[in-house]
Amino acid sequence: MCQINTDPMKSQQGYLDVVVPPDILDYPTSTDLVVRELSNATLRCVANGSPQPNITWKREGGAPLYLPSGKEVMAVEGQNYTIPRVTREHMGAYLCIASNGVPPSVSKRIFLTVEFPPVIEVPSQLVGARVGRQLVLQCLSQAFPKSINYWVRGDNTLVKGPGYQTETIDSAYSISMRLTIKSVALEDLGEYKCVSKNYLGETEQSIKVDHVKTPDWGLSSTKLPKHTKGKYLGRPVSENSVEIPDAEESTASSSPAPRGTANVFLLVTSLLWISCGKPVARL
Picture 1 (spheres, rainbow, N blue to C red):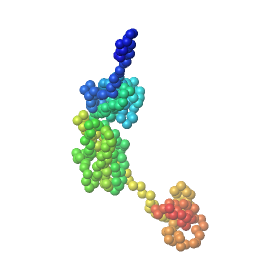
Picture 2: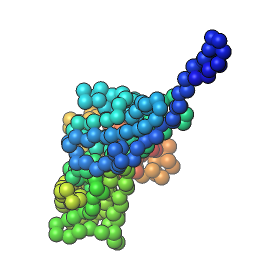
Picture 3: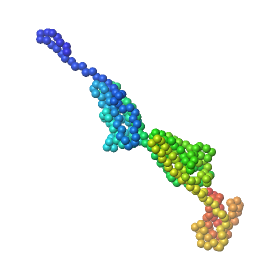
Picture 4: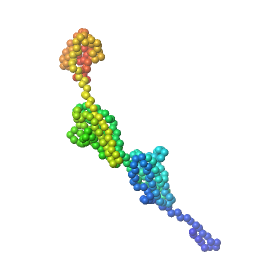
C-alpha cells in the first residue's frame, strides 16, 4: 500500500502475484515400473508450482493410450493413470507433462515393463522337403524377460555346424528363430522342436519334416506302341505306330510325314514339341 499523509489522506493499494514454473516431485512420482501381464498398473505424477500445474500423460512415440473402457486416446489428464489388466502391448515409455502457463513446462519419462512367459507361434507344423535341397524352419517367440531359445531334435540340441545353421532375430519382446538345413538328407526327415524359456515358464512347438519326391517329367520311350487304339495323352491315335525322330534328324529331313500317320502333339523330355513326325517348337 502506498499512502500520502495529506488532508485528506490518500492511499493506493497494489497486489503482487508470484508465479512459479512447474516442478515434478521425485518422491511421490512413479519410477520405472515392472508388472506381470494381466495385473493392474498405476502411474503417478505429482508436481508443484504456482499456479498449480496440470498433469498430462502421453506415450512416447505418439502411440495411443487406453482408457479403462477400452477407448483409445492420445492424452489423459490427471495425476494418476491406471491401466487395468496390462498386456504386452502396453509396454513402453510414458511421459508425465506438467504445465501451468509459466514456462518452461517439464516432463518425466516412466518406462512400463510387462513380464510374461514365452509364447511360440509357427507358420506351419508340417513342412515338405526334397533331398539335396536347402530347408528353413521358423518359429516366432514372444517373452519378457528375454527368453533362452534353441532347437531340439530327439534328445539332441541343434547348434551351428556343418549341416545346420541357427539364427535369431530380436525385435522388442519378439524373437524370430530360424533353423537352416543346408542340404536335406533322408535322415534329416522327422520332428524338430523350437523351445523358449524364461524364469516365468517354458514352452515348445513341433515342426514335422516330410519327404517330397521330385517329380519325373520324362517319358520312358519316344515311340508309341503299335496296335494302340483309343486315346494317348488325350489325342486320338491310329493303329500305326508313330516314330518320333531325334531333333537333329528332324531338322535335316525335309520329307513329308507318311500318309495315315496320327496327328499327335507330344511333350518329350527335351521339351521338344512334335507334329506329324517333325519338330515344330522347342521350349
